[in-house]
Length: 223
Image (tube, rainbow, N blue to C red; front, top):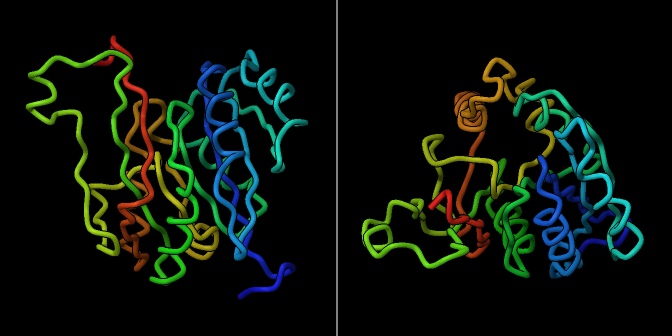
């Protein structure tokens, strides 16, 4: 067992844009995450709204949490810029990404961390399960169009099935490979899959942890 002073430090990064209610719910949920003797964690908010809509959430919750929380504003409408800022502002040796409209199971971080340490991989991903705000039509459930592919825990994941909605990285992989999210993607998306593709091409390995479940809100208009 590691000594307290040598515990790993995980920074949970939340990139958010004009979802204060969802953000507040997520922060309170993360505060209740199962603890471990091998790591401690803190929360980092990267607010992509030039009007600082996430700042009141930060101010309201920061004094009521059991974990440290920090806030930064990155108004540039570029997904890669926001995610790169999260990496550069993170002070831990591990970085977890989760979206502001998601909710993890209570031992989400423990599952990710344990899988990463046991495998000696560079990162670990987990499943994102849709959570419909209203019952979806039967044809949608039957077609499984809203379901994403899942793997067995420990399976190596190709870049085709990667994303940043549920992932834990070793922070070193960005600096040692000089590989970051590509800002040329702008606000069109796809920068996350591209990042994984380039990291994998440089010999980095990412595995799956099927127990590290996250539930993603699917509002009626998206359904």
